[in-house]
Length: 116
Image 1: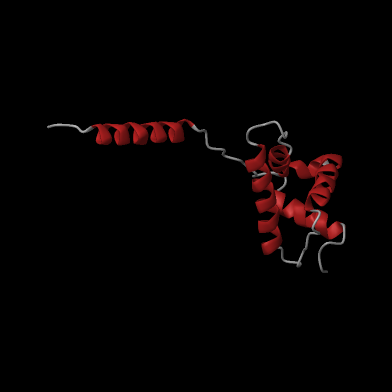
Image 2: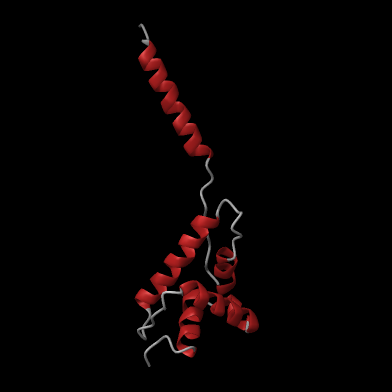
């Protein structure tokens, strides 16, 4: 059985791509509690996971809004509102162990972002 140079190069390239893909750590963000959500959303800009963490946070907020029973909305400056939510949760630590979707809707409702 004779192996051609092109086949050998292709196999090496595929093995290298597979190894690189396997070496890249997957981010497994958890948001079972408000505290966990806030921790993910506080990821520092210099952290390699920052971009994915921000996408996770934004997606989480949009998912909560899509399912909110009171027709909650979020202004375009969602990060500012989310920063207010984080400050509210830390000022009321009883909410840090709450379901993050429930606490977010409660915050939005308290601040006039939901229809009553």
